[in-house]
Length: 319
Ligand code: FO1
Image (cartoon, rainbow, N blue to C red; front, side, top):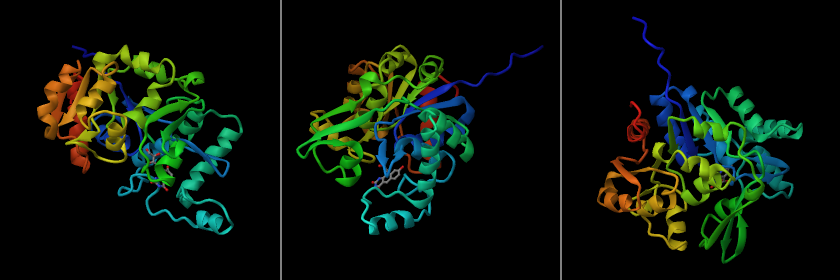
């Protein structure tokens, strides 16, 4: 008897920076990396010194190729900052800590963008050169920037996040350029053809919403809702990282996976919540989102693999 060839399930992941990258580390340990497509956030992108810096794409790139700084989550392990220190001594602004090796990546990207390559083509080339095995796509090749309204005025993302240490209460968020942006090549197909679409445990306002803000994206993910499994970045009334809890509060939501379920209810059929929030599963389901309860804190490789398996199971795939 001839058995049909086993085809690997195709998995598409919507991901922000550090939380997204850690989730992906677990995922590529339990499925073939070549079966994974990542749609990355570009709302955090920033032009510095004439260079295009794409922090969330780069965090995925470095983490999945082993160059990352595990403690910080972003940048290159062991990097130095001699170029930036020299720039600062020469009067340049230096609040965004670009390391020397990291700068090398930005120079290589700038060269490609400067000769007319798209961000997705440049990302693919940099990924290939670093040995990235999964497919990493920016949500869009067009300019899309997250802007936050605070008492200090409307701030671009990195001014809010790094320069002002996400200390300002946020009362509104918009995605500049979103209306004119188009999904990058391959993005809509990766959503339509996936056996599972996972939404990584990333901030719903500043990591996932900018991806869904690209025209056509929210509809494309909603059309696959029964195959979409999101992971709550909120555990036991707090965010695992960054300003998600403060943002939920200042934007008038409870700091709870229930708020995450409500925010994603049109696109995600299932939300994975932590055991610490098991008692909230009923409230998640009242938002018309199936709840799956497991350990979600990605403290080490074992925990990351277990979370990836739980997401596969919640999406009906073999784990
Ligand atoms: N985050 C910081 O908190 N301070 C920094 O100086 C900083 C520099 C930096 C350089 C390159 C890079 O790819 C990321 C960097 N990040 C820094 C992280 C980044 O701003 C945020 O983690 C993301 O944009 C939020 O997901």
